Length: 288
Image 1 (cartoon, rainbow, N blue to C red):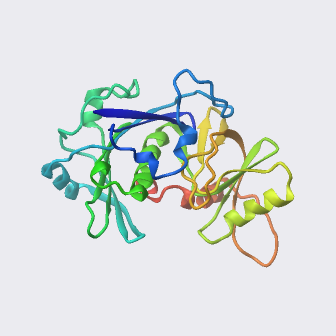
Image 2 (image 1 turned 180 degrees about the vertical axis):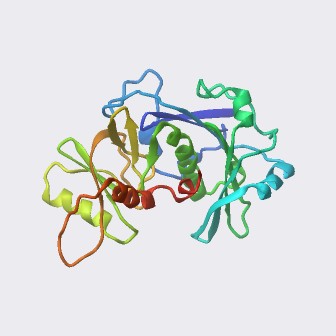
């Protein structure tokens, strides 16, 4: 028997399909704040109740040997190692027909079944010695994952982050590696390499600027809606458990660097893009 958990993150519907006897969110925090109750009135900011995309992740996919073998023909975009796990991200512009892919009732209206079958695949693999590799295969707004054969909460959180980012990007909405703080009705997001002092900086705002509110400390969602830009909380907040289901207009984006003095410089458009790009998901940077 299968069940579906429905979340709404930054206006996008995220449907997680899994076996009814398995509780994937019992071991990871943050998602309960974004659970969507039918007929509930949620006040999470300026974009409350707006479902921009329907993103479906099936956690109990059962890939055949042929399907897994086809990954070797995909183009490697990015790979890295963390926590004794090797992660690789691929793109396959000519994917095979996968028997594990079935039509889904939650598909975004414009994504017809035949379009899903022909669309480009993105593939994430996470390998750890002694464990079965986690595989996430994404086509359109539908994502297939064998997590139920792996059941590692760390890989679950990361796989959902990747799946969400692949789909939300098509609606000009993207997780940005940053620390986001709300002050006087605007969100200010601070970029920088790990250890630069993003969290320290936002904690100083909370300490010295009354009314400051930490929105997210690792991966807020930045969305372009018309001629406006919004920042939303997310279930992905790094080591700081800050999971606010709230959306606030963007005030400014600041890239931090350490120095023995204080200085703020407004960047040109080209320099601003160069400052922002390193804080976007690295795999997506290489996807042309």
